[in-house]
Image 1: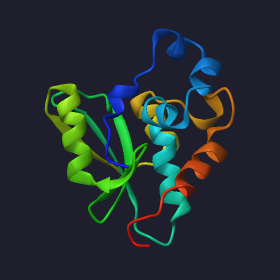
Image 2: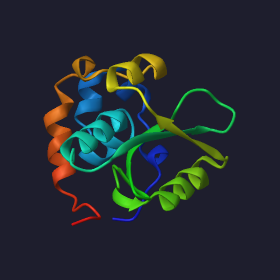
Image 3: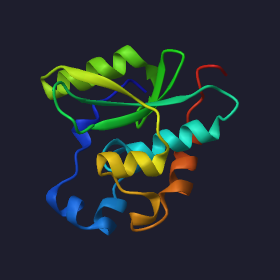
Image 4: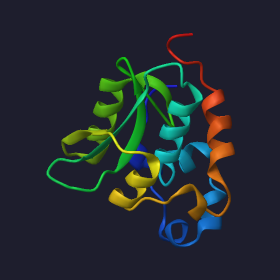
Length: 144
């Protein structure tokens, strides 16, 4: 699947305020906007034999990240599956209509959630980890 901008799946006002409504979205929408960070960490943990990192992007000059994803040797994994990282960055920048800054994430998931005001897994309507593991398993990694 070709890289798609995460912003194309942004949550509506009701999806932002009601966790059940957000949960009931299709997997791609759920992991594009609202649980991208969960998917990134699950991808990394699912392929622990590889040196997968977590990165995020933010609008240039802003502090808040708008999308997180997993990275391995120039490949990025997010709601669109595995794509070359430059393609993922270009698609998202084009959608936003502004330059993006890549941020290397060096903290664990709990610290990331605290620092960037993202939900921890226990703050979702249901546990997102099994759903994320299932989603990761649908995509053949680039080293396969």
